[in-house]
Length: 211
Image (tube, rainbow, N blue to C red; front, top):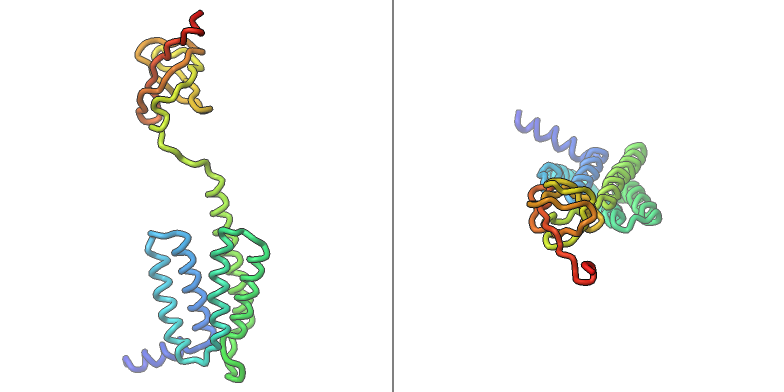
C-alpha cells in the first residue's frame, strides 16, 4: 500500500505541469517571505513547494537556461519593487514566460501547458502589482518619530492653558497641560511627554521682548 502511494506521488511530481506549478508557487512564497518577513507561513510554504518541485524536476530533462530565466525573472520582480520601472517589469514578465516555455530540453517531448504559462505569468504580474501598491502606500505614510524628541523644544500656546489647552510645537498641534495658567499666544517650552499630552512651562520673555 505504501509503495503504491509513493508511486502515485512520484507520478504526480514528475508531471511537467505539476512540477512547474510547484516551482512557481515556491518562488512566489520566497518573494512573499522577503516582503513580509517574520510570519513564518511564506517561509514554510517556500520550503515545501521548492522541495517538492526539486524532487519532480530532478527526474525530468530540465533545460538549465529555462530554469535560470524563471529564477531570474523573480529576482527582477523583487528588484523592481525598489526601482519601480515599467521596463524592468516587462523584462521580468518576458523572462518568466520564456523560461517557462523552455523549461524542458528541446526534443524531450515535455512541455508546460501554454495556458498554465500564460496564467502563471498573469498571476505573477497581478501579485507583483498588489505588492507594489502596498509598498507605495507604505512609502507615502508619514515617518513616525519618538514623541519624546520634542522635550526641550519651544512652541506657542494656541489656546489658553488653564491648565489644559493646545500648543503648536514644530508645526504640529498638541494637547498640553501647564502647572499654572498660560494665555494664548505665549511661548512655552516642553518639559515632559505623557502619552499624547505635553507638559509645558512658560518661556520668560527676553529682555528686548519686555521693553
